[in-house]
Image (cartoon, rainbow, N blue to C red; front, side, top):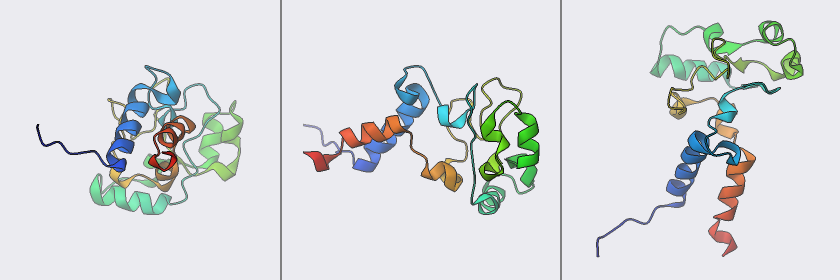
Length: 147
């Protein structure tokens, strides 16, 4: 019998995140990266409480010349960009991660072509703290504490 490694809880959780986020977002097969895109929803990728710290990490690892306004949207700009979306009219939701305006899904500027985060290791606190209800439900169902 081949010696196979039993995956850790973290390995299983990572696989669930990756599969769900890129192929089965919100439990809808074929849907991807819902929390990293706005689409037509009244949604914002923010508030980013650690904006300056994230920008510092980004400059250290990806683009040393990145400007704040290339990475984030502040309230005054956001309310003009999306005047029909109430969440963008609330200054408490800023700064927000900049979205790509030339894509109808309005993806986060860090969302790669494969719907994986290009800055996952250094991502903002907002992104680190977010887990959708679908993934939370899957992880809870797999919890060994329930056995």
